Image 1: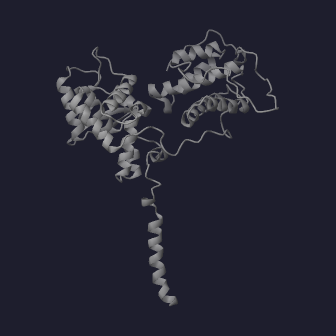
Image 2: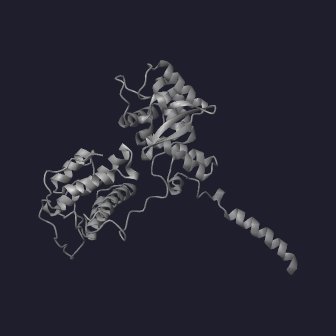
Image 3: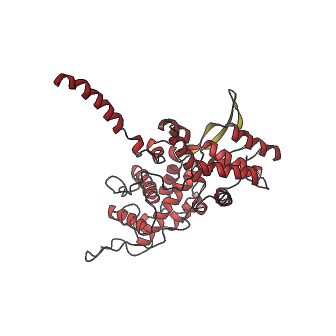
Length: 363
């Protein structure tokens, strides 16, 4: 991980703007500050852009070096994960500059005001929670490195509650089948293979855009594919016959050689925006309702829900999807509160049998 270093070691307090330390007037409703946009394209998306943003805001070289080390940490090994943290931290940097804050000595109240500004911007609870968590992680590292007085986003801060069910628009089993049937009959072999692979593995879109021809193979008689996953690792997935057939049909038409499994005409790997547009286009063509609300993650969501609905144990689905926390998997279990599955029936049956057995004692 490379971050460009500033030429001098300017103090953090040198961030321009003249509103640092301004007390809020207690009278009336508190106005949530909004010195800069909190939606749209992120202020920084790459390590270089983040370094330039930090340098522009007077962050010293030592903090840039520690930020580079933080981005290279165990939880941020993959380029996609690093990019996400960069975007989330850059939102805070721009906001703090607009507020005239000394990044090395931020009062926790300012962190609360930032959280309120995110809420006022209309961001989803999950997005707000992610942004606050990213900045908290960054400050925890700077605090441990003695470059910040405290972590203003740390212990005691109230965070948005992540919804217990996934907010992603999902597809029913029938809709998944219709999409695959449509791509098999009306779309190119590449499109059909791409969607079949995503459904068969429940993978993230970043996995399918980064996989290569060399990732295909066999293991103890199973057709398998090794997909890049979170944390810079790879995970081996079994390919069921319908997905193997789709991929084989595509490979029969594809030019040989190494490189990305799904490539453009110029040989470069397809990108995530392309897959996003493809999912919506195919769904609309297959007459799927609310196709304009779908995303590549809708396929992953739908696979998780389908497996749970079919009775696969939570820990099996968790491992299949690569979730570190079972609570993430449970968000896809739409039937977990179904009255038909209520444990009260088993409890009642057990108690009724025991009551009947003991009733004879008191007859």
